[in-house]
Length: 143
Image (cartoon, rainbow, N blue to C red; front, side, top):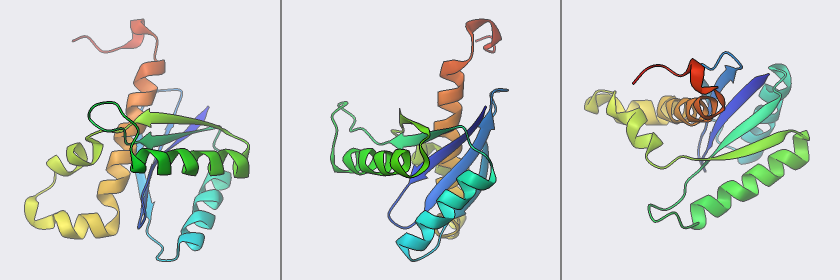
């Protein structure tokens, strides 16, 4: 099984890959300026990598309610499902961008944000959370 983690945004789409071995790795983000070109690049990446399932970030509010950004992710996921025919999982992504930024030097944040590095790190965290949930308890690392 091949999985693609996706952190959708209005300017960039963060990507990460993973498989049944359970390790998510960031990929270069899609940073095309034109949304339709960025969408086509995403569909091409899905085909090129022969992805089996998609994992999309779902930015719920801190009180677990569905706000405008989460609704955008629902629409994005439905469009992906319709265009690819693949199973699309929505995974809670609260604070993933913050976690992705926390390991970067403060003076590099603007550059890293523009390049999509933070978006793809967030996609990697989203996908890793999904893969960890699927892993049998006997394979989880000890606490």
